[in-house]
Length: 459
Image (tube, rainbow, N blue to C red; front, top):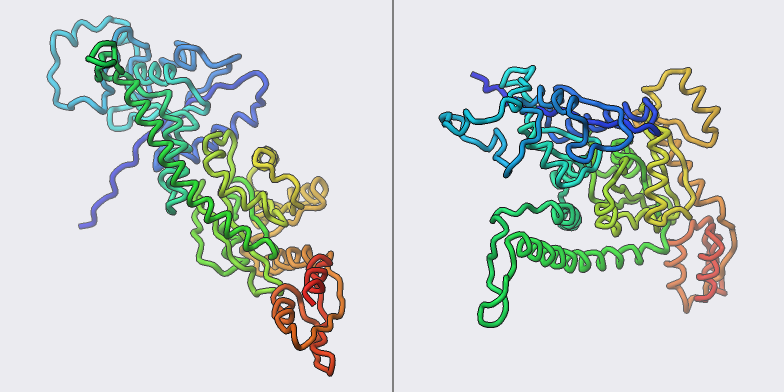
């Protein structure tokens, strides 16, 4: 008998549309939040939206929309007064009703869930960043776990981090996010006596927890700095080689192209943020000199600043690259906004000086009319699909041509007493011809002027 898979946890989306946000951008952002929910393993059962000038101070949306939201979760739809109570999922299912339960105000029964208990959402995902008090108020009104956009992205990063460096980077960002959201569990009572002789108020529970969190962040940063020094050393060793960084919005196809261009077995999944670790491989078939391709972490709208800061060493691969291949999912209607998001993140990490090649990926999923429009609006972009071997060859040739555009061809005569220069020439240049005479080894090479100058200096 085949065991059935357990049902996925259910979630409801909550979004506020501001006056300066178009309907298209708002719908695109909510759809992206739905994809983030899917990546987390959640099933979206509904959504609640409202047009407002700003987020409501108390609970993000107004009282009417709060009632609508609670219909998906089985909550009351009203923010209760008094100390917070455990959420429904944290209470015992077989708990017997007491007299105290009967004393709940009538207003608390104003909302009844439109869904049966087994179909109710247990998570509320907000397409904004909210304050700790707003999140707590929403939890009390909906009786569900509340995650804002930053919390959702952090959760995905935490799941997908595989290397030690990525885990450290995500943990630092997560702890920084948690710091202002720590709750006082001890009623504000002192947990540690203060002063010599025990006099003084001492540290409260939340103060002590925050100090422990700061100490842990400092410890993780020290360990991360050690790893970053090793990464920086490796990048310096590659400074004489051609480097290409694949950048772009998350799920644009960077890992697929990394595998196609280098033949490496990098992870390829149709999920947001499937790749968090930077991988560097040589372009295949190999060229002389070698061209190194690096796959970087994907970008997303409203990428948390703590994550950008924590992943700065990883993103340095993009900053130090000779060429940025900016991959765009042409089949996504929101790709113009995604292009701008990628540009903003590149500006933030100071990676705007490197030349950029715009590539419209997944062109096989685009109709002929859209292809024609893209050709007019983006004439310099390369429309390709990783599924087409001819397109893989086309992109490889564009990359090779980029590095050969500044090459010059010259002849070097290397004395037999300095044959090490011959080895350097074979590794750093394309050797067109090689012969030997009474003067030494005669090489005709193609390379960038600065490389040839360096070789001549060694003669």
